Length: 180
Image: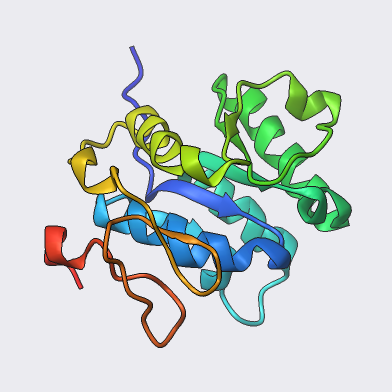
């Protein structure tokens, strides 16, 4: 029997520029606090064609998380990413794509056939994160997520009392994980 493939990253996150604030201000903090190895377009090598970097990111990641919104579906390159990740899944006999619906959207059939996470209601964000981390095989103390806090951008911090860093990201997990 073949040994399981070792991946450099647990998850590659593909999102539209319009959804960057939520990804960087909420999702990444929670994933990093749970020690998830994350790869995103922001880490692509300079001077390398984007198409090659997307392929490398998908191949080096156990799962591909698609942050879905009208903006994501409107970007032509996002459609390529969706198809590339699903094609890689066929090649490896896996189902690596996880659709996460950030804003209500009509999914194309290629994505509608997959079980998705629905994060269109901010009140569900802690449960969505819990389900995502469970699917990624990560364990975390979810009691820290029980009371979301709103900030001036009307976003929720992953932990009660979360503050924004100068980069615009939350530091709410710092007191729990001591990783900040």
